[in-house]
Structures are given as C-alpha cells and as structure tokens.
Length: 141
Image (cartoon, rainbow, N blue to C red; front, side, top):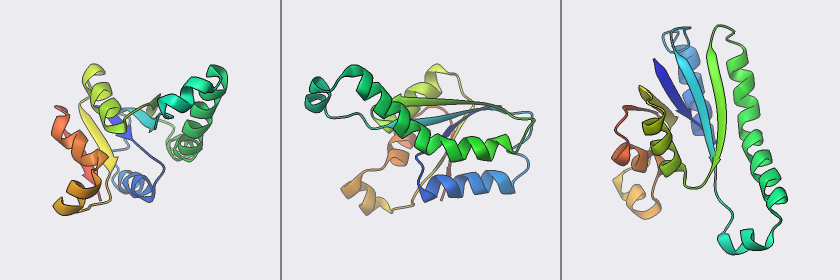
C-alpha cells in the first residue's frame, strides 16, 4: 500500500506516529511511505523583499526541524521504504494535491479532535483534507 503520512511536528503528529508504532500491520515492509510536511508560506509582501536564497534556506530549515525526529522514528524500522518531502503553502491543499497526483492508497495524519463548532471558528487542516481528498484518510486523535 502506498501511504502518505502528513506531519506538522505537533503532539498530534507524535500521537499518530505512536499509533503506527503500536500496530505492526502499519509498519510492515508491504507499505511504501511518503512523509510530507508543509511549511506555511511567508506573506507575499515579506517574501518580495527577502532574498530568494535566504527564503529557501528558511523553508528548508523549518521543514527539517519537523522531519528530523520523524526520520529517526522511521529509521528504527529498517525494512520500510520511506521518502520525505517538504512543501510550502497551504497544508490542506498540498496534502490533497500530493495524495491525488501521487496516486496514494491512503493518507494518515493526526488531528486535535476539535468538534464541529471548533472547526467552524478555527478551521482545520484535517477537516479540509477530509472534505477535498478522494483518497481515504485515516485520522488519529
């Protein structure tokens, strides 16, 4: 199974990784994993005055802060096929487009579990992914 694992470095992502670790059927060699982290884009006005190379370094460093512990998590399982990617922009949009274009079988992500009212007020990446993604999504709360 080709699985897209969306992470943001939060405790909800860590809880989702804990769920994967506790269930051997997820971390078997039969699966191919792509871990995605989306760094929010710098506001266009600010980005216009920042050197492009410096902006790229910023995005790379922010992405690596999140992916470093996740690389360590997956490195403990030697028989896994795992790739890592960092993107910039809207997390929900990038997750949905990657899942669709990459022909993934499933998206796995953590969620804080706000109720309906909380999602109306705050919005939620998980809610947006569920609403727009044609790929099955496993939310771990």
